[in-house]
Image 1: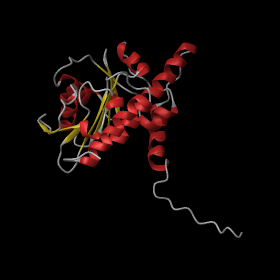
Image 2: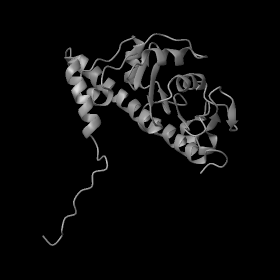
Image 3: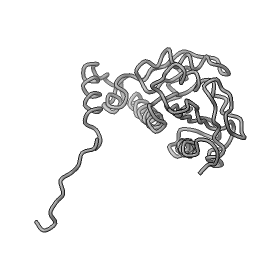
Length: 229
């Protein structure tokens, strides 16, 4: 476990960053995960230019919402201004993931949103995955673009750039990134065969509500079975 401030969160952010290459969402050093600590408001983010296989919890950098380094021996990700802008504007968000995953970024390259062609999209996203306009790299323009165009979706494509996902936790943002690439891959293959049918908004809303209410264990306790019967 990392020493210093927020050791458990630094360990979690390291783990989440290392999940990106495991799911095929990044190459070399591109892409990053950050998580906001609800108590302090500080953000733990991947260091810039470090290979994922070399990351340690101690490498993760702690910054405040203005970008000041609170603790860390490395430079924070160059995407830190984007992450911090989103956190300042979205108090409901505590986890952000950025990738250039192949299939989703292919849709971003042509400026194309992904309609709800699949029940998995209805369940997970509750609507299409939007594609925002091109935004300059290097400042807060990308963060503003994400906030202005993501709507209620946990994921957005940015034209000519890549993917940003958000969540109440880092794990939720990671799941959204994994699912974004998964549905983009499937939709790409479907488009090679024929034009898919869009699921109606009413059915998308119904499926999304059902998934939110029914999916998973949600604290259910199963009755014990008597082994003698």
